[in-house]
Amino acid sequence: MKVYTIRDIAEMAGVSVTTVSRVLNHRPDVNQATRKKVEEIIRDCHFVGNSNARGLKQGNEVIGVVIRGRSNPFLSSLAEAILDRADTVPDNFVTEYIDEKDDEFQTAVRMTRQNHVKGLIFVGSLIDDRVRAIKGMDVPMVFTTVNAETAALPRASSIAVDDRAMGRLVAEELLSLGHTRIAVFGSNPVAGDSLAMRFSGFCEAFAERGLTYDKTLYRETRFSYDAGYEVAKVFFEERPDATALFAMSDTVAVGAIRALKDLGRSVPGDVSIVGFDGIDISRFMVPRLTTVEQPVGEIARRSVNLLLDMMEKRAAPRHILVEALFRKRESIAQCSRT
Image (cartoon, rainbow, N blue to C red):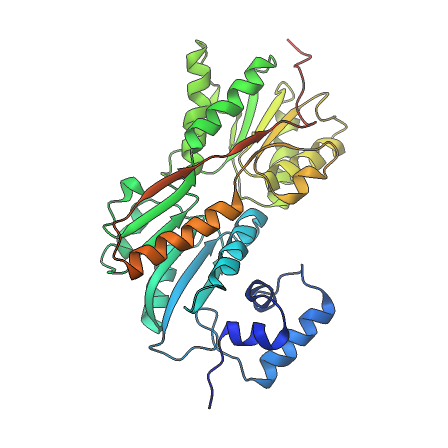
């Protein structure tokens, strides 16, 4: 009996591997007719299995892609761009979407137990003490969107934007507009990830002007529209003195804009907002969202190329920084309060 892969299903349905992945992960952004067609082919081909390795027999060689953050459209678009790039290479790519509070390294360990994993790509990872779980893995891996140079993993490459520099730039832009009481919504600021680097750079911009950032303006949050709405609604009720917000994810920024509207406050008239990532909706918000745009296509392409170089050419690990762009749009303005 033939064992079908996700690429086989995509070819029979006349769609991309990305679209099949969206159907398998119950993503809402798939045309209903296309979804029905893909699901019928999946059923007819008996394409079954757990979320770690659909359609693959134990022992088959695969490249694992672990995406940490189901509700983050930026990470989803990045994972889909990686799958689009993977569609041009012969290897089987297996994806696993996990919650942002779940452990991506234990997930990778489980994937290797089920299949012969020849390479790994981590999307949206948090590098901390949990990384010990994969230190014994003798497979090449790439960390996407986080610099893994300090992780002490002998076969790990990484590709990311310069988060520290971009965090500093966001602060400089808001400070130049007269904002000093700036809220920051992010993750745990002491964790060793890209978000902590953004916050470090943000605080450096204050120090360079002889100022000290008021850390009581910092709030930890999950990265989703709902979470952004809830944290902003509570925060701005408690701290009406804040005149600006740096949301470390566009999803959080979008939720915050809605919360401020419901509180009867305007953006940017009362509160200026800057996001991070450059997701598509940022260009269509009212007001259009000022954000730091990460180059999704380049990150995806170089992530796959880095992994292939390590797998096929035994290339040494590399840690690459790519350029992000500050997109100044309608959601920031001169501070009108002293």
